[in-house]
Image (tube, rainbow, N blue to C red; front, side, top):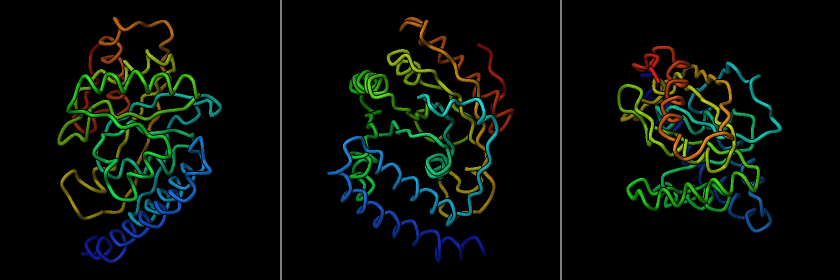
Amino acid sequence: MLAILRTFLLTDPFFFGSTAIMGTISLLVSPFDKDGNRQIRIARFWAKMNCWSMGIRVKFEGLEKLDLSRNYIFASNHLSYTDTPALLGNLPLNFRFLAKSGLFSIPFMGSHLRTAGHIPVMLENPFAAVRTLGAAGRIVREKSLSLLIFPEGGRSAGKFGKFKGGAAYLAIQSGVPVVPVALIGTREILPMHGSIFHPGNVLIKIGDPLPVAHLTRKDRKQFTRELEHQVATLLDGKYGSKERSI
């Protein structure tokens, strides 16, 4: 009962209100923000506020493995809509999302995603998706940006899902190391088809960065399996993720 009251009296109104307000501020800042970094700072503040309203308490394991002066491609499992604020509000790097194109049509949120430099991908069109990944790889390499991708292609309804090849393709195109990331706890806060938020702890586990400079496109399938194995190992049996052989 407390979770229901919190959701309808605090979390939902706060989410829609903060999205409208911070989205408007981001849009007003955008003409003066060529690299999108100011808008990302606004978005990080939005994410932190919504973590508070959702009752998300984030802890890290393995953050010391990252060189905060470098750029990476982060590859994470995907459990819940709360994954985005949990990562955006707490992962201490300047990064963009590779996000499904439908999100870019949402009022306020969509305009921010476009002007801040997040990258839309059409999951329903494989040819367009490949072109997007190629362009994203060039952006990551030339602008020294970090990028976050969910290689399952969407939220996993049940067990940890099989990775698609997009993260490997993007990494090989850009030459930027890939960091396996395991999210634990966001599904318990908001299940995939749920509407009630249940405050709780979220653990973000950071794996060892995987170098890709020596790889070619022919290695994409093998590297995808390696990346999937690394995230499964970090999950340590959560969400049906037994360590997978490569």
